[in-house]
Every structure is written in C-alpha cells, then in structure tokens.
Length: 277
Image (cartoon, rainbow, N blue to C red; front, side, top):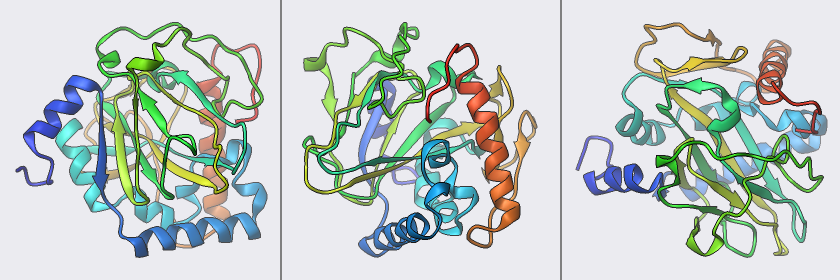
C-alpha cells in the first residue's frame, strides 16, 4: 500500500480504464456540514449558485474550499498526477427530483484547453448517487484514444455548457458509477462519460473538482485561475489566487466572477452561441 492509501492495483485500474471509484473520503458529519453550507448559500444568495455561478463556489465558501484541499483527496490525486498539484476549478451538479436534467456523453478535456493531459476530475457525492437519480456512466478504456467529435446541441435540459454530445456511444459497454454520500470518483480528461436524469423523488448533489492539474500543465486557450493545493509551482503558467477566509466576502466574489468569466471564454472559445452555464 502506498503512502496515500491507493493500492497499486487501484492505480493500474485507473490507468487501464480511465476512472476509479468508489473511494471513501468524507464522514457523515462532513457531508452534513457541506449540505448545510450549500443550503445556506442557496437560501441567502440564490443568484450566486445558479447558471454560470455553479462554477467555483470554493472561492466564496471556506467550507467548499476546505473540501477542495482535503488531505485524503490530495493524497489520492498525488498518486496519479504527481506531488505538485493545482486546483483549477470546481462545479456543482445539482439534479432536482423528477427532473429531466442530464449530462450528455462527453470528454472533459475537449474544451478545457490544457496540455499535457496530466490532470483529472474528482467527483464527490454529497448525496447517494444511484442509477435512478442519474449517476455517471463511464466508457472503460476510452481515455486511450483521441478526442471524439462533439456536437453542440444547446439542449435546454443538458447541464453541459454547449450541450456538447458524442454520438453513438455504446451504452451497454458503459459502467454505472454508484456512490454513497461522501465517496469519491476519479476520471481522466479523455474518458467518455455522461449521466441521465434524476427520476427519483430526492435531490441528487455532486461536486466536481474540475480539475486537479499538475503544475506542468499549460493553458492553450485563454486564462485560468488556480490555487496551489500541494507542492510547488515552478512553472507559473497560471494566475494564482488566495483562499477564502469568510463566506461571500466581496473581494472573493469579485475573484470568483473573474474566474468564471475567464472560464466562459475558454469553454465557448469557438462557439457561435452561449449557453446558460
């Protein structure tokens, strides 16, 4: 067993399949604290958590910032991308009960503009995630191939920026990612994945660190804001930011807004239309 707790077979599984789950990270108490923080922000500042603002909540909430810098998560990430780690963005995925919102088949790295591909997405379940409430599904081994063609649909029920969709993905070959609240799933930027609508009577909440990147990863298009999560940044390719000490501090709100506008320019770089996310 390595220092982080990832076994060699787990590392090999990630490298072979392009994803790894489930990993136990948060206690019930920690999950409850995060859910309470989300509810507080939604009730007090509803406009600060919808649309484009579902991105980068860790800049305006010390509790979400604490989650992003969680030692257990970083220990796992270090085993996969190295000891020098940057946080380059987060995103809330909220699926309301009996709702048609879904995430189409896609690859995260297609529009992020980073190279080399020494980064990954960490997806944390804040509620239990099942097939009924719209769990992610992964296509094993798809990360070993080139990026697939994505068609922009701008479907109003699609939770992705452009409704970007890879067509003709073999559903029967995909694997459902079932998670208990507090568990973590990891996937490579080239791994094809998506998720269906929430057909249950309870809300499904996921929080993605999108992504943890190694410090040698460059931004090919636009500008990205980062936090140093572990190690050292000897490259300084990106705009470094501070960590929040207070919830909804005006300085941090301005920082989050700048980061989201920069992200928007990257994600819609060659698009003729702008979506709601």
